[in-house]
Image 1 (tube, helix red, strand yellow):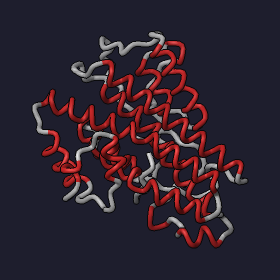
Image 2 (image 1 turned 120 degrees about the vertical axis):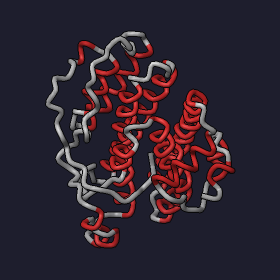
Image 3 (image 1 turned 135 degrees about the horizontal axis):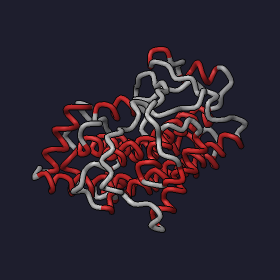
Length: 291
């Protein structure tokens, strides 16, 4: 998840309902545990464990579980970075003038986005859990997305360490959880806005980000971001596939619904578009060109 957007204050809210222990190993218990775990490293570890257990059939959907527990309003977060309202966030110039390098500034932003993306994937999984008409393949895809985002977060964190920095060193903000809240009621809206808008915007910014890092003389970070952006194509592709399948289940025209959802939540899509990467993801140009 590479889209940078304006945001609101993200605060940790603890779910006071009892959560399942890791030993129970159901998809729902994994999701709740990850969303209420503040440590990013532990979120990544649990996501990878969930994928392994899922592939080895050690956990199932347990569709007979009608427990109405929903994901927490906000996922748990570490004490740092400090999250502030967008208008209170220091400008890029202020941060760079304080001695932070361009590479650290950019990578820290991306790390924050990737961590949000891990939680977003699990929030989506839990909300899809109650839909009995959604096949197991959807859950397989979204667990993989969560693990990919976790791996990207880990890769960026390691690169920050090599640059003498760490995730949490710079104030952060995120619009992703406002979007999560706005789309919590509708799975099609969630996939449309996260995968087909936000992640697709990440593809649009791909070459600009890589070029900026190269311009700063940081070829290693540029190669890392290039790899991550390439891998995000698959996430957009999964979004396209499942948005169309969900539209088929509901009897909606996917292109018409996509445009309607975009106008509802983001009004318009900024150019330029990375048409090549979008096409590789199966994203039809007619859907987004004139929005």
